[in-house]
Length: 259
Ligand SMILES: [Mg+2]
View 1 (tube, rainbow, N blue to C red):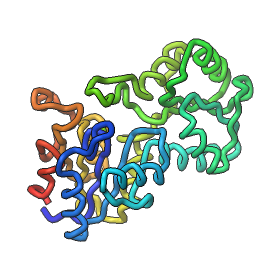
View 2: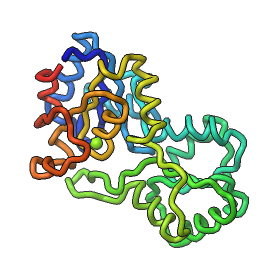
View 3: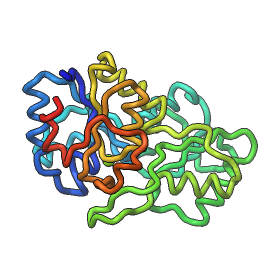
View 4: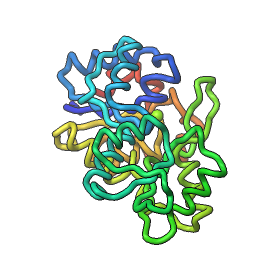
C-alpha cells in the first residue's frame, strides 16, 4: 500500500516521557522524503499545538503546529461550535484553560452557574473540586470529557491516572455518564483527522500504541492501522486487541516497512 497520509500518536509512539523512541526522527524524515502528509495526534489534553511543536523540536523532530492535533484542540473546536456562548466550568489543567480562553470561550469558577462541565486531566483534582463538579452538573448542564484515557504512561514506565479517571470519578458521584467524550477515537477526532489531512481515508495510515484509541480512530475513519509495541501495548496484549490493527510494528523505527 502506498500511503499519502499518516496520523502519528505521540506518547508511547514518538516519545516516552522526555525521551524520543529510537528511530522516530528517521521515520518522520522518511515520511517527508516520500511526500507523505503528517498529522501528529495526541490525547494529552494539556498542551497547545505550538507547545507540542516545541517539545518535538527539542527532540530534533521538526513538525509545524498545523500538523498537530490533540484532545485539547478537538475539545476547543467542539465547544466553540456547540457552546460558543455558554458558561463552562472546567475541571482540568491550566494549559487547557488557556486554550479555551484564547478561543474566546466563557469560563466560570462558580459551579452553580455552569451550563457546561468539562472534565479532564487535573493534577490538582481533590474532594472539593469533585464536590463543585457534582454541583455544576445539577440541572441541564452538559457533561463533556476531553478524552477517554484512563491511565497515561509516567516517565518511569509506570501508569498514572489520566482524564478518564477524572471523568469517571465525576460520572460516578453525579450518577450520569458524560454526554460526549472527545479525543481519540471520538467522531469529533475522526473529523479532525480527516479534515487536517484532506485525503481519502483509504490512502491513510494511523500509527499508535493503543488499540482502544489509536487503532479505533483509524478503523472508525476507514484508515489502515498499525500498533507499535513501544508504549502501553506489548506482544502479550495483541490477541485481545480490539479493534485488530492491520500491522504490528516493534516501534516507529519499522514504519518504512509498511509505507
Ligand atoms: Mg500513545
